[in-house]
Structure formats: structure tokens, C-alpha cells
Length: 125
Picture (cartoon, rainbow, N blue to C red):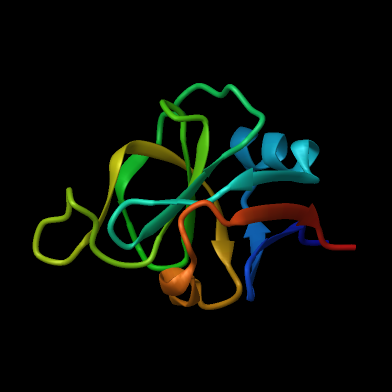
């Protein structure tokens, strides 16, 4: 059975199917938790109550819908378009991040989320 986390912020809800990784396991175990949304270009990120090491397959360029964990900032990073580090419109995160899941809903809906909005992360039952 797939493990699903639900990320809710303002009127946006993103369900995330978790990969079989240490980062995904840690996020699942940490839920539920709340945080504060921050933005960097077309990326929303928010701190999580975790300290994790960078995994060997971490990367900084992601595709729409791939969910990442930024180890340097202890934060979930959700890119949905270009960031200040992007080249030619790619989705480039601040540094290599651990990929932990794939969004089942349209992450581009996060474009209108306000900086400082409360983010809730829960497990889907």
C-alpha cells in the first residue's frame, strides 16, 4: 500500500506519494507537523523537524511534481518553475536535495501561496 503525505497551505492541497528512501521514511514518521511557507522564485519551501544527510542520488535540477528535501536548510522544497538559480527555464533548487516523493496533485497551484502562510503536513489515512 502506498504511503501518502498531505501538504496543505492556504487553499492548496498536495497529496504526495512517498518513495522508498530514508528521507521519505523520516518525513512520514515526523508527520503531522506544521511550518511556515517561504518562496524562492517558483519554489515553495518550508522547514521540517528533521536533520538529514544528503543521499547519494541527491540532485538540484528536478521535474515538476518531484518533491525534495533540502538538507542544508532542513526543509521540504517544492519547485514548480524557474528559480533564481535556473538556467533556460529548468527547475533548479539551491543545492542538491534528497528526492522523497512525487506529487499526485498539481504543484503549480502553489504559485499564489503567500510567504509566511502556515503549511500543514499530515499522513493520509
